[in-house]
Amino acid sequence: MPLTPLTPALFRSVADHTLLAPGTTRAELEAFLRGARELGVARVCVSPSALPVDPGILAGLEIVTVVGFPSGAHRAEAKAAEAAIAVSEGAAEIDMVVNRALMRAGEWEACEDEIRAVREACPARVLKVIIESAALNDEQIVGACRAAAAAGADFVKTSTGFDPAGGASVRAVRLMRETVGEVLGVKASGGIRSAAAVRELWEAGATRFGVSATAAILADWGAADTDAGTGPRPGPEAADAGY
Ligand SMILES: O=C[C@H](O)COP(=O)(O)O
Image (cartoon, rainbow, N blue to C red; front, side, top):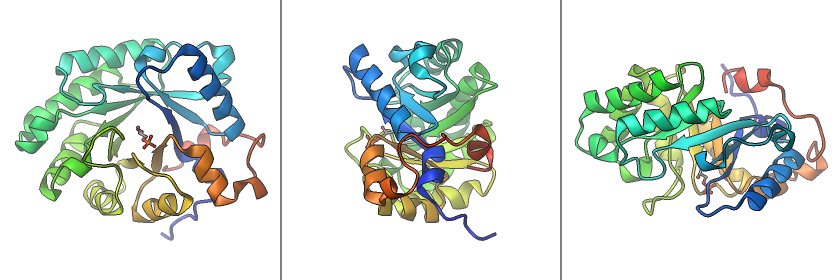
């Protein structure tokens, strides 16, 4: 099947517009959410402590949050509890960081158990598994993707954006896509700063993007000349249509 061209409108429907900076104040969060509405994105990714968000301020934006973030070195029960609380406070999607020690040691059963514990804590929500691909070798990336699929995750995600090893790469996205086939989504995140980078990652198999530089990316795209700003936000069907 030919790849759907990634337009700015489609990008807005598959971008998780992100603010995960430690120390973000309530006023900064509100400014970020106002900016998200102006950008016309469908979804925002914020820290769990930012929840719940006043629906008046949220104005229909979907909430993605993170658990075990950013190190992943938390107990599985703690990650599951974080996910359950986030769901009760309005999160539509959960991005969990997997225990890196398990992936580096090839302890795939334990890795799968950890992901399943979070899966069971948020059964009706989209679950993404952050594997911090820049810190793993190919064999570890493949193992982590298989564990995520076996545990019932919806997406594998390249990076937290906070690891010195780096963020999303075309190579990792391609390997992750090859491993999960069309069954899971692949979220590219961390260090994505230009429209060209987004398009390259899309062509490599990414179907979702975690980006804090959303405004700069859209400006870079020349989106102001197309449908930026106050245009209609893509409906849920755009996000559900295999992206
Ligand atoms: O999960 C999303 C990442 O934290 C975003 O990273 P970024 O700030 O480099 O775009």
